[in-house]
Image (cartoon, rainbow, N blue to C red; front, side, top):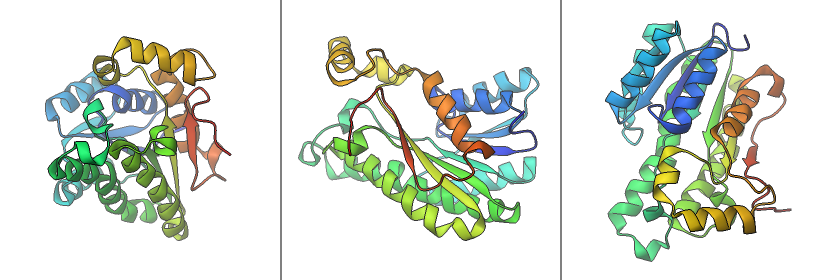
Length: 250
């Protein structure tokens, strides 16, 4: 088991990719702190995992609130002894945010950046000390393929996540903490499939992607397991697109 004895703190862990990450990491021996603003959902996921014999704890946490983040991180450390892996997965991503800045209220823009950008900063800084004390660790930021070409508010927030990946890779290197990112393409999460019109999904797959199928959560989970493992010990500051060839950039 690649993560035996390790502890992961996963934001947005109640459903979707966060839940899939928790299932995969516990399957490889890790303990997990499942942090989500939806505590009931996080608790359901934690109970599912503990019923299988895994070690998991549910944590009520709004990543935009540094005090809630600090409390959730402290509870995870108290329960499992420390944190080795942080997955910054929580984010706002519905179609309402994939619009020009002028189409959104200032409050909506602020809420988007508070979660997608400030949330990454809050969680990374909160986990840093525990990782340093344990001899290093891994931070994995979930960006988006929209962070490469999109000029919408959402796309810019995910461009900022790519920037934070580079900045924190440099800042935390002395603590032996690697920082990388994954930029998923159109992925079959519950929220994405519920939010996107089916004709748009089909057109995106057939006309924009080079691999003509939807990205599955397993595709993203495989990349996560690699980047969080010792197999990727020489990789830091990178964002890996898992998007079927969209968008190709040089």
